[in-house]
Length: 103
Image (cartoon, rainbow, N blue to C red):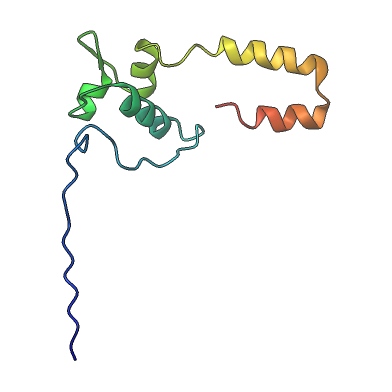
């Protein structure tokens, strides 16, 4: 006796063209990829790399500059304040471990 299994696939009908199916995590030490990922997540309707680097009709050289002008990241002063505050209550080993995460 022969058994035949019939498998049919159905295409997604809701929201399949509005999502990014998978985006890998990028370490912030790899700056350009990190800021590219940030722009891809926050710039709707991106069609090209040039589109991502363009903010208010100005084309920036790097994704880092474009993300700064889109106000997706703050200046480095925030990290300086964080390290100054951390240095008052953290032990040296903890401070070294903390500073390892700063881009």
